[in-house]
Length: 327
Image (cartoon, rainbow, N blue to C red; front, side, top):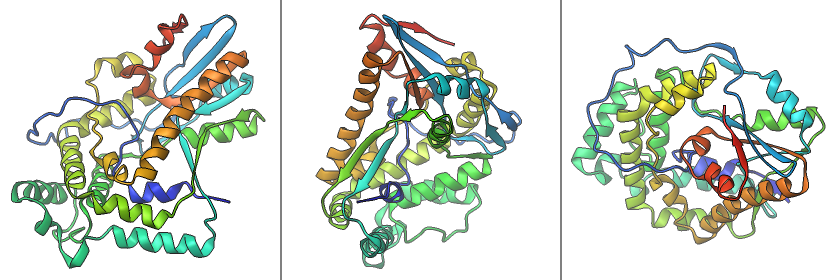
């Protein structure tokens, strides 16, 4: 059995890592980045931790964020100490394994991903998007420095991912998960690491074809959702990244809830098998946390900070009688 967790990530490059949803808003004129505050740089520790406890069992939660300022290197002696003291270290990430995916099948899957990233029959984006949406996409493409014909042959979900990367680059922020860094520290400290792990046992190429075969409207919605986020939310994302790097949870709480939707994820859910894997993984990481809380004195969790600020995660423990200490 060969682990290859990046395959699905390549297929769904435009999917946001956060799960919280906000009401859809109409797009407005895109804010400029010129007047935003100077980007934070250097070595930063991020915010202090949340503590969830009951009956001598404690869950210590470190809130991560993405995107991060480009010039920031995350390092926290406090977090390293807390990880070193934990009986179990985990995160809200989901590891995907593909059964019997050897080198030859791996190459085949990569080729299938490349094939599926293009619009069928040689069509272009202007042929599959309505004129208003295509005009918005073209304006954003020019705004973020891409050439006029850039990404024309890509499917809407792939074009959305490329556009987001280009916009982040111009804003001096980058998509980066700190879960891998937490896992490295756990290994260095010789702490037990456990994360949600699901195994795809079917035909990965067939699943991708199934997902994309029914993806037309979800893909277009994904591109629209990405444009909405960039037009409405990009300066806010940079400010949130700065506040996180400074460890300023008060500022993060005062900022609007980030724009989040599920249209991009719904593309992947066009495959019943892949949709089931997503649900299974989300159920698993919560079960890992609850089991560790029951059996261990100390558990360390890395989770997206939006889960703590806007989701029902903390409330679910408060409702069960746990004490919550917030930074």
